[in-house]
Length: 252
Ligand code: SF4
Ligand code: SF4
Image (tube, rainbow, N blue to C red):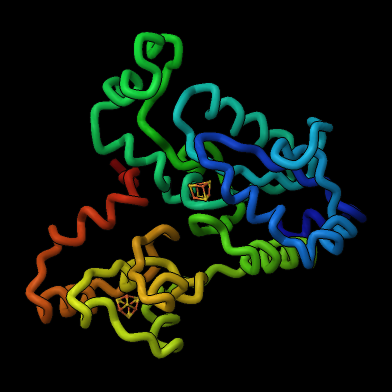
């Protein structure tokens, strides 16, 4: 499947935006040192944050943002039909990110808060990740995406390979970086649950992991239980942290 782009000399790339802050698209524009090289390898044909030209013909589609209304889902289905490969950008698209906060409350009340008297004009439903609506071939994770991660993904696709995606949790990268552990400072951290690939960015700057990259394939549940017990904490005390970026319950 990932060989599909190799038949194109300069694959056409389209970037779409659903419910998001557009920060992940901005990360692509922030590739000051690499953007010229990227433009030599691919042709952007739809990228509203960067250009006014647009085309419905593309090989690779990248979708940023969450699905919050039926028109978003329709857009995803159309993109899936037109593109050879479809990937997502950022936490809003997967696991569901900040827009998913809406799922923790009353959806109609949320519409009223945002749109006031005109709420009825903006049909909105609980927030879904893009892969709840269409098949997705790969993901660039994070809030926002990491520029290096984006370039590695694009490079892999242009070489006909599956983009890299670590299966292990953030704690592995955090230990390699020799960081002090947030639990030892009396804080909580979602590193044992969260998929690595960010280089333990937040813990490396003295922060803690909020799970923006979604769950690891093999989360270290036993380690998390041991950490919580060791520090006199309960699972409920990290549930709010987990809910921040993971407001969509899979299989629900
Ligand atoms: S993942 Fe974060 S940076 Fe990217 S669009 Fe969503 S809120 Fe913005
Ligand atoms: S729990 Fe957080 S701070 Fe501690 S090792 Fe894991 S990622 Fe690092």
